[in-house]
Image (cartoon, rainbow, N blue to C red; front, top):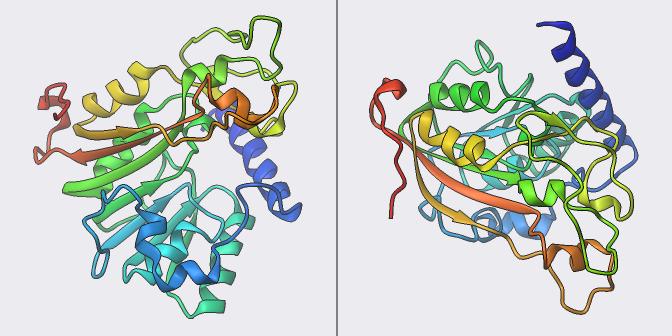
Length: 270
């Protein structure tokens, strides 16, 4: 690990540890009522086949006591990998409180060997790819641990949203950040929900996200943009800006049956 890598990892680890202690957004645990019927909450698109019972699920960069608890309540064997020890502590606390079995591992999302030694059926990754400068090692590791034909559901921040200003001018929001591969984003002014400004965030182009998945041996089967906008929200709020610059994208990809991703062509299923 070089100095630059150690720097952004340590800063992001500390930022998320502190966010847990401050009970900030994205560190809130699962609602108990959702554990009684977890699949509609976990998988509103129906991408996971209706059940996780008997499956092995890797919740990647997904500490915090939300995805892990839902997957365990749905009957899966659950492994959670996260950089933040405090986020993983939330998973352990929720599992103990509700009698669930969850294995937690403190590690970077790009370095799963040897911490994840078994093949998994599903990888579920909430928004987190913005905290690393290069997606190639991430997708390579997911491809390594995921069974052939296994499903990878990942969420990412949209490049245009990362570029856009948070405070509107006379003609609306404008692109304030260049869309350059691996670019470290400046702290954002205005509505705090657009970005975790206490972390180091990177911008990733569509060719790095969707193209990167294809080049890593995945078939992209679906893509959704979760609705966050609100026509009644006042200018400058997260909901108002989200009408013009959708903040997130959710992607369903399947690991190609070939064991050699280098031989896999660029694929996009209908």
